[in-house]
Amino acid sequence: MRDTIALMDDTLRELLAARDGHFLLESGHHGHLLLDLDAMLWRPAALEPLVLALSDSLTAYNVEAVVGPLVGGALLAYRVAERLALPFAYAERVAYAPGQLYSARYRLPQAFSALISGRRVAIVDDVINAGSAVCSTAAAVRASGAEPVVIAALLQLGETALRQQSLASVPLTTLASWPNTLWEPQECRLCTVGVPLEQPILSCG
Image 1 (tube, one colour):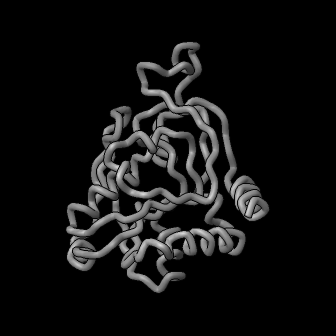
Image 2 (cartoon, helix red, strand yellow; image 1 turned 90 degrees about the vertical axis):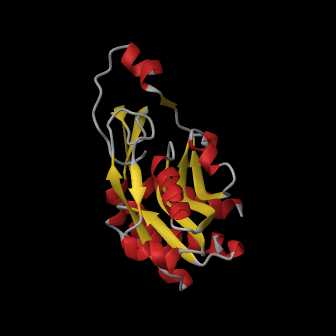
């Protein structure tokens, strides 16, 4: 089991190009770590073992549909849904105020809302950092009359997402977890020492 976990971690490190700096994330937090999630999608064959492992991790939850936030999370969610032979829907971002904490709002297109009502849903994202996309996607799923029964991701960064009350009752399953520090803008240590802020980053939120 440990060898399998180590292999998943090594594969993610190979697929995800990491950059250190000072970034404004979708959640409104400041962070020092940025992952190139698009680069991961460039190699579908290398990603396939991770898709299979993530799909297998959902079998215990009696999932009836899979939802992912656009863009990268939805592409991964589609492959998981295909693997599990389940219906798929995506949530699209319809509002965002840069710099405000958890301002991003995701919504399911109307056609999906009608189809997903009453179903047990897995929310699948590529990487969960502060949890901005999955928090809002879970709210959109509930607003459509469905129940989020599990949240799944390839990678969890840090502990910030785990402190979100809207996710507290939903199990989280990931293939890997890396330490990471995020700051609210008024408490950002990088701002304090004058490191220039790159803004905004609309992923890794």
